[in-house]
Structure formats: structure tokens, C-alpha cells
Length: 137
Ligand SMILES: [Fe+2]
Ligand SMILES: [Fe+2]
Image 1: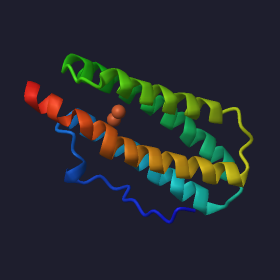
Image 2 (image 1 turned 180 degrees about the horizontal axis):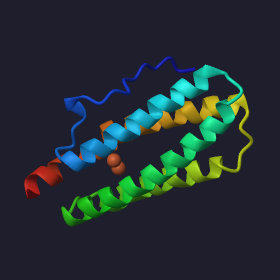
Image 3 (image 1 turned 90 degrees about the vertical axis):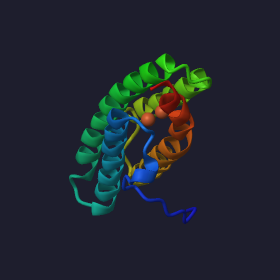
Image 4 (image 1 turned 60 degrees about the horizontal axis):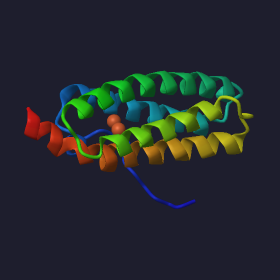
């Protein structure tokens, strides 16, 4: 365990300067918070709930990535291709999880990955295109 404490609650400092993308990021972070809650609950329904949440996350991430990629491509963000590659990697990982056995260790790993990825991606990678969006508007 890294002991890294990250905030999963959206704040103005996480804004990428685009209201729709900000709303989508809020929802992604909320899904991460739900993941943490479920993985901590330890009830018999955990695995089913987790699978449902994973499906929701996959669907929501797919829609968000598609929308975000269109926006940054149109804005001429120079690192657009690398950014899209990061999205593809995350998406491949999420999809691979669907076929894995949902052991408690697997749930923990998924939770840690989702939280770190969401926060890192939104705060670092997504923040990278902010100036491209604000310069073009
Ligand atoms: Fe992104
Ligand atoms: Fe994003």
C-alpha cells in the first residue's frame, strides 16, 4: 500500500475549462467513490454490486472518452494522439477485468487502480489540454 491519500471529490481546481467535460469528470469521480464504498462494505452482495458498477464505469468512460477525444482533436491539442492512447489502455484494462474472478484481492486491486487512474488522469493528463481549449474558445 502506498498510503497515498487523494481527494475523489471534484473541486474548482480540477476544472479543465469546459463545463460538459467537468460534469463528466465529476461523474467519473463519483463512480470511483462508489467503488471504494462497495469494496469496503464486505457484504455478500459485493461481487454483484461491483460487477454492476464496473459495467457502469465502462459505459460511462466510453462515452466520456469519445466526447473528450472529439473536443481535444477539434481544439488541435498537440498531444491528442498520446492522450487517446492513454484512454485506450485504461479501457482495455477495464474490459479485461470483466473476465477475472472477483476475489476480494481483485476487488481491492480494481479499486486502487480506478482511484489512482481517475485522479491521475483527470488532474494530470486532462489538465494538459486545458490551455488548448481555452485558447481556442
Ligand atoms: Fe482524458
Ligand atoms: Fe477526461
